[in-house]
Length: 213
Image 1 (cartoon, rainbow, N blue to C red):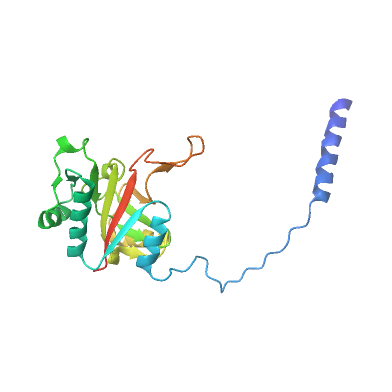
Image 2: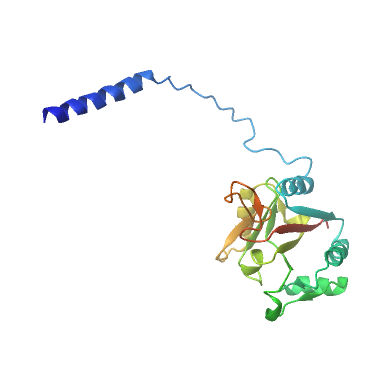
């Protein structure tokens, strides 16, 4: 028992010594007039594009939707994709008009080289794309295509993540989708010998086609 008391006293002495040796905490003053987040500069479209491209994503901006789908047709032709996989009827109609080959046949799903989807919102400050399971393609098209293409309009741009969350709540007042997530660039991991590897557990390329109007 004496030995236990001695050990306890030694531990308490060390704790006290450590406590006395600590430097006192400095009182940090906060300036509530300073903004919490970085500003959106020079504008939301440019900020989104710059942030997405800084994390190995791609963003191509067009003046209107017609030019955007024409650009998408050129992109598909240049990359030599036999078709885009698309299960969104609205997008499919635009692909038809632009002469972009596409398929929504389940037999072509696993063989796809690229897939195209819509999104909920774009987040300018982080270059992120908010998606949800409420879309016609559910969740699978966000992770399966080797090249994931998103078509969007500048009206879907918000400044910060919390703005996107508020907007999605307003969009689905009767109940949120079962899954809401943000995509920030192509899939990546640095677990393999601390080397950045793209496409480790999802799309290797992530491209946003953005229409200003």
